[in-house]
Amino acid sequence: MNAALREMAKKAESRPFYLAASLRLYMDSEGMNEAALAKALGCKEDTLAEVRLCRAPRGEANEFQSDVDRIAAQFAIHATVLAEACRRGEVLRKMRESTTTDAGAYMAARDQEDPV
Amino acid sequence: MKSESPLTPEQEAELHRRLAARDPVAPSQLAKHFLDPLAQHLVRAKGEADEPMCYDAATEALFNLSERPETCISGVSLWNYLCMSASRDLMNLRRKAKSKKGSAISLDSVELSSQDGKCLQTPDFRIEIETKEEADRVRRHLLPIVLQDLAEAEQQALELLIDRVKETSRYAEVLGITQLSLDEQEKIVKRLKDKLNARLKRARDEG
Image (tube, rainbow over the protein chains, first blue to last red):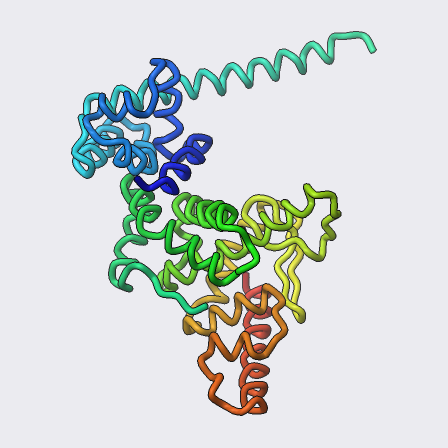
């Protein structure tokens, strides 16, 4: 088991460029660990580290499916499970960003309203 | 000190092409092929750094190249580029670690980084990098110009120069000229340092 590659995949969770970021949010939302996700995708945990270090699929529908199919074919994993995990993860990431932005705007507005 | 790419030049070029073409699998393959060799290169080359830190630096260099493959221009070896980039990242990590231990970092001692570097310098040359945008500009424009057409040994010598290594013997080792007399070694190393400094200055003006 390549521990270094798994560690790198873990660090990639904080970078939306990587599939690891979406998959982390998906796992958290499902209460899954890596072993469970690997099983759902139909691969070993070592392979999952390599999957997580792929670039996240692009946003446009045809590009998204093409990228998912490319990754699924490369690692012989279930494309439908990967697509669902990517979509869910991406939605969760955008919701989180939106919530953070809204909270920031709300606090800034409150700062302006509050008497000094 | 001398190390080789885990891939052939043709395989490197193909992987670089796929990174640039946004092949979603390419970043994973870059990591799989280069993470261990790159970290081990740092462990051998920078003996005083600990292995986990070398892996952190290698990881950072691989992230940066995957996300911005255009920073390594065509014709420059991915391996040599990654070695340079990871060395810079390692120096930053070491300085940050020292800083956490309480020693203040002077502006003079901070190296190039895509994240938060302040300057790129050798004993005879210095570029101020005040912002992340400036660091990106240096990575995108300056380093490729500097690295272009340099032999691998010269790139390793440049790495030493930026590390501010002074010993002629270290340069002689990477250049493979240790069998020559010390006088000859000094002349060759001096000539190379002049060439590299001139190239850095030219790149700064053009970049």
